[in-house]
Length: 221
Image (cartoon, rainbow, N blue to C red; front, side, top):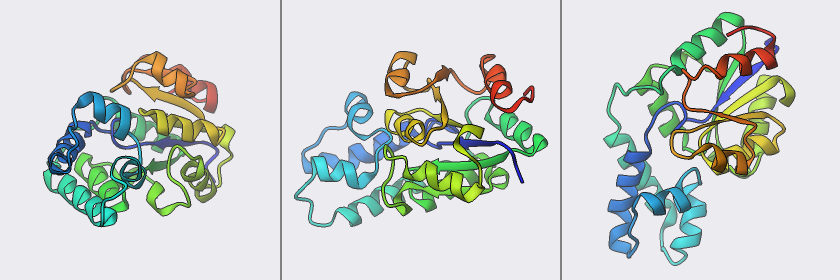
């Protein structure tokens, strides 16, 4: 049994897909009177479940589930294959595999999207579990998705590290008792630490990552 686990968010953490999501939301919401620019996306949409966003901004939408399904279908249609992974992430996955660490994806994306993104960057084979917040009682920022990943992997929270780029994701992992590393792909160090990140890195080539992994696992990455 693995003694340690690395848990990864997807959008903005393992690959930079926020521009695709933002474009899809902008096209879908413009006819509904909402203008989606980068500031709006980062403040109100980034890292959240569609259902939570729609409940706040489109409470009178007659078919929110249908709109959500359409949004995610359009995201998958626009996602190029192959697609570049976040710098350094594939090397970290190889290191984890070599050392026998468990690997999990914890995302608010629906499962079809998660599988599409992992396939696009060629990383699906590394992961023992993929947890979708849509399939949990509550999604991020609630800790339920991370708790489910720990349960499935049979790993205690203090033997895991989570990588997240959004406030919702950071709050979810931190509330589950997991050491949380913020990825500064969209937000700065201060914003990620304010949400609960223990530390931050620019991407997976950041020299600070090695000591982080070594401290928790006792193994030099």
